[in-house]
Image (cartoon, rainbow, N blue to C red; front, side, top):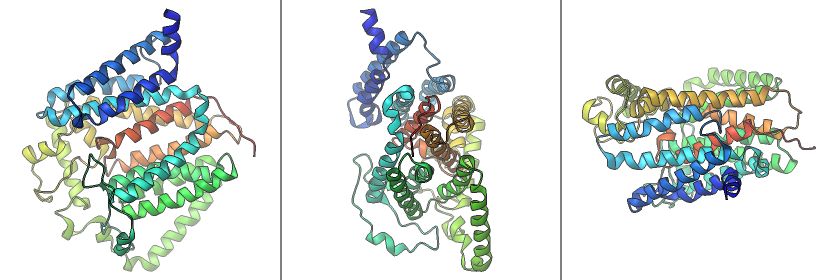
Length: 423
């Protein structure tokens, strides 16, 4: 009996299956009976304990366990500190689901299906593109070179049952930008000509979608991520990006007078809206006040906007503007989860970065596909961290699920054995 329990509990697919079964109950708890997410947590905890029994350790399944333990411990504190449990509790459930999916995906490090990660990333990119293209509320006028009439010909009408207004354009752009570096590196060094061709098509589609979303923070993050990633891959890419940068500066000198930087950054006409830089800075200042007043507990998940409007009213943002979060993952984390939560997240980001860099720079054969995928994931992580200065897509209730899958993949790829393919 004990042997069978160890065999079952030690299989990464057992915990992956248990996590998959509980995800809907934790992510969509607001639409289900109150007992269902609690039952899901009990079941998930039992599966986790069985895994600990089979492996003989509680911590140490991934290099990020200590950081995640600190994050996990902040969740009950966040719930205790919240003035509205109806708002915070569903987010606590979702956070537990995200942590579980991280461990479930990370546990697949030595599994054979991990070799399909490159294809999985491309398929996921195209699927998300289709969903966001049909369900995103486009139409912002942030980039002056985008003709707004083009939005009238785009498909629309997809409304997820949990959000009748559709997806936010910044959210769509930020999520799709995470996959863009992987599409580029697979187009350059994919395992086969077929994968490279599909990756190139995917890359072009993602670039178009990012422009349509007009997410300026995501665009800045991509422009930083792609050169860093490709230069890490092969140093001769430095010359390519120098040519691109020189060309860009020349075009800016020639056509700079025709570019409305006030429109891009947000001018006086948009001060009452969240899209202006001035409004973002005001939200960041409110987050700093909040961190000073609630340094250890935070105000609770999902409580940033209510607390700002109650205790720290804005002057540039109109009272009826919905901003949900601080539009900065670092300020947002500290404001809602306290400084301990921020420390846990920063430790996680540092661990993921170190794992990827070690995987990328260690001696490898040129055709090691896990190194190629690690480069793409490193680019995506860099996009997330840079874009996080301007937005907080991981604090949307269900979008974070995608991001934590990527975090789990980072650990799985970084800790797996190499896989070489022939030309």
